[in-house]
Length: 250
Image (cartoon, rainbow, N blue to C red; front, side, top):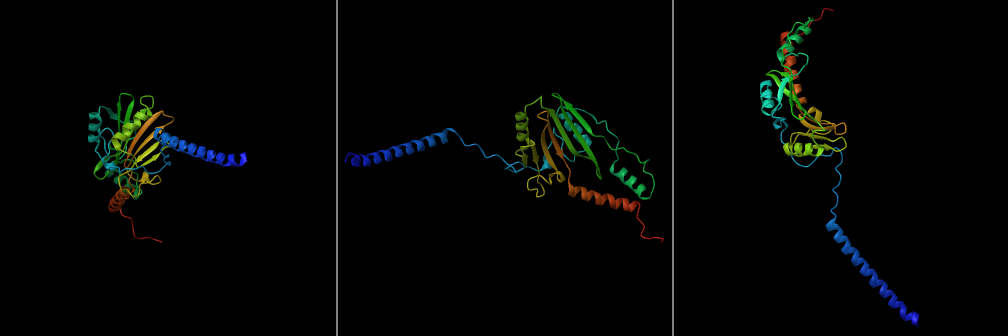
């Protein structure tokens, strides 16, 4: 008899205990969620970052922009506090000199005597071992900036501070590869900008080298559309000066 009466009581007690434990677990879960914030989901390497990016043509490194003349680039570096000198490099040809050389070679003649008077690249140095190199390319309108490279040793600035400065100036990157610590900025709305094709378009790239040994920033004006346009202009002018024959003498 006692066991019959005690069984319902035991079941009721177990049910009450289960309810109490569940309620405590629910309260504990709520408290944990308030105190411990969930970790953000890791960004997949190479995934686009949120946010729009301004036109790369408006970006600058120490005041130097793509398409600038040599005089403007030098003035910008000096205004930013850099000591500027000519790069120790081999001489190259201007747009006109390149056409002259190509026309001579078209005719089977040597282009050795064609002058090489193109302006040399610029190098700027500043305290904390900061260094900038400005490269130029020959175009019909003259020598123009097509690449700006900035570097600072990792011993001079932490990765966090460098990264914060880059983001403050240029905004969120278009692409970010957390594995290789590389960030890419392309012009907003650029349909051909991806991790596979950004090298063919004007872009800004930030890279951390060799285990925090150096931080590098590159503003690059490579543009397959512009290069194709310049090739047509170049080939057309060479053909005008040294036209191919249409005849043969078999």
